[in-house]
Length: 426
Image (cartoon, rainbow, N blue to C red; front, side, top):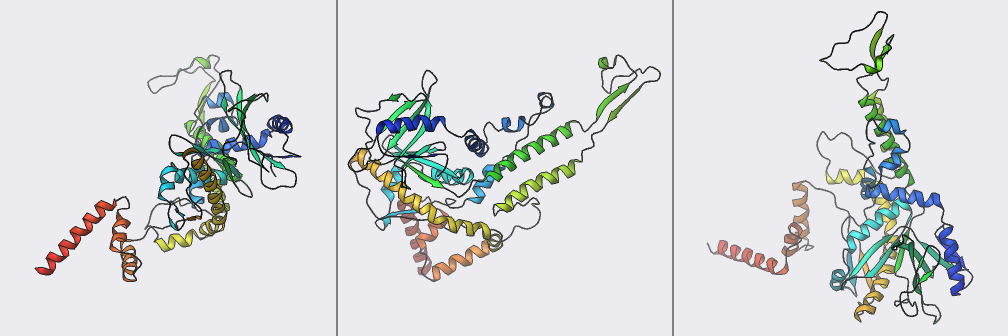
């Protein structure tokens, strides 16, 4: 159980409403703030405010803050489940109809993968759009449980504000023991806003699925803040690298103007000089690299700062990424479970809105992570696949042109056959 979970004694609507009011007012500000900070750095929005708070206003007049953009890169490098699109099957056949109607599912699933790892837990809302399924990530939510149960029977989350700037939330509950599921909106004061005649959930199930990790990647976010602070300090040190002008024995020093085309007339017993900053920019840069390197190591990643020399082979890269690949393998069962849960939600939404049942026996096969090969390595691999009958000529063409249509593929194959026949007759 987390701050996002609420346990109820029964399904009484009044108890649910009372609990909703308490739950929303009882959100832990610290946990929400950390989650919001993680998402700000992931999407690289509103990041300046997380750095500026550590500097005075007068300091910030000298140069802008310098936040880094390593959080999304860390998230993409660390989470390779959806690096390549998985193969989805229904009843042992390619789920083409489902893939078409599930709009941008692969890209949204990858976004969920990365943000769930960063924050520790994310919700994923399936909804019906214009003749297709659409998806939203739900970072802030409340789940509701009955005593003794480990699966939630309801969820609520904020969806925006009304014309009076009141916060608006939505509530979904599932059907239980013949009692219809409920669906309604409510404002920050707990006033219910009707969505249909009886506020019934038309799907009977919660249209939100969840992915949870045992912990969040808070160290990545804290490193982002620390590196942003250090980068800003370096920028300030660079700004003052020429030194701070210092004058003594001059009453009107504030009126002095500097410039290579100006002559300073100094009175007797006065002095003027520049005092340099004691900062060593090289050492400061190494400290920043240290923050990044340690965070990468803690998350089974590596950072290559020196881009000189020959690029490592695919085998060498795989060895270097071994820890990350092992983490990917250990996380596949979690994501297979989520794929099945989400599919059942999608299947019911499609059935309600179209009357079509997409079918049972859903399966997903996550694509293996591929590493770049040299032309020689790739050629030898493809020749071996062809020789062992594991790849056809059509597969070979699709390997180099995955977007080719079946019609164009057949035309190309016909031209190849004609060319071979002409060579044989010559």
